[in-house]
Image (tube, rainbow, N blue to C red):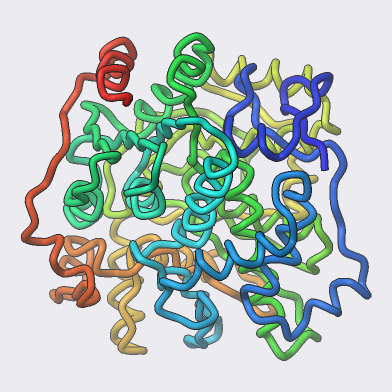
Length: 460
């Protein structure tokens, strides 16, 4: 399979380049040159597979030049051996919908599903090539922890994680900053997540800098994460017994990566009806999908910090698709978003979006009320992001099998849970040690040159 950038289709890449680069040199995102789709017979043959088998069948077409089938099988088994569920995820019925629990990995977030795989891909590559790689990643809370867990202690790899200072939960921070491996570096930026993300993008676009440190990225823009996340859409679809009703997914999302993975699954032949983009009051995606106004506004701090984002990076892949894979037009639109902070979507394009996507947004009171109501009725605690996904189905009325993606364990957000139901959601025993461990991170100003200097001094 060949890949191209959303901003320049003239140059072709292989999976190795896509995986290691993360972001194209022109600032675009990598997408397959030609889309892959299962036919009905192939799709039917996947039914009954366990999670690891299914992952291998779905991921294999995208990585065929990078790894053989035997090694891919071994890496998938290794990646998911640390999950608390035998089949990685769990699907439970709650009221009139299903909840897809994606937080049974080592750092209690859906990011583990893709990140464990990526960490082992890096190790596989470096064992075969005499190179050192420095991973630089921005996090709004969960990506950083999952990336650190996947990369810590691995040879010839360093990881630098930028998080917004005092804008993630204390538990999210401690899971990252109590790691003692000497290839892990935590950086707190005086700013918000968009600032962190812009710094990382700028480092990628500075080709002299990115090449000098052999920089790679594992943010949700990395195509390897998208394909890994598409697997659980397939898996949950096969778990639903009643195929006479349409299947809809509500996806709590800030950067559009997890919901784009669902869109990819649909393009690969999975009969998904609608994907509901569920956001907090930082609602740029909701405004784009419901009104056609992709307009950046000031980010406000909320109880669901992983959604405290205004510029959703993965939305560029959808823009590329919607504009008939026109790389020049996509590049022009992205420049307009960067300079003016807006993209007005025309009516025809908006209809195309709404054939696949609907959206809903919740304010802080609605999030707390949802957590409280679900706990009262079902004795089940939802984290604030999952609560947004749960309530989105009440705002967007859809018949069918409605599946909510549960993206994080509630114990990662103690303040929100305490505020909603006056209780503490306890961390699983194997992670409780982080609460008393010494933290290690550096606080740095929101300045590109300062960050580059800090990283360069620590590259070994």
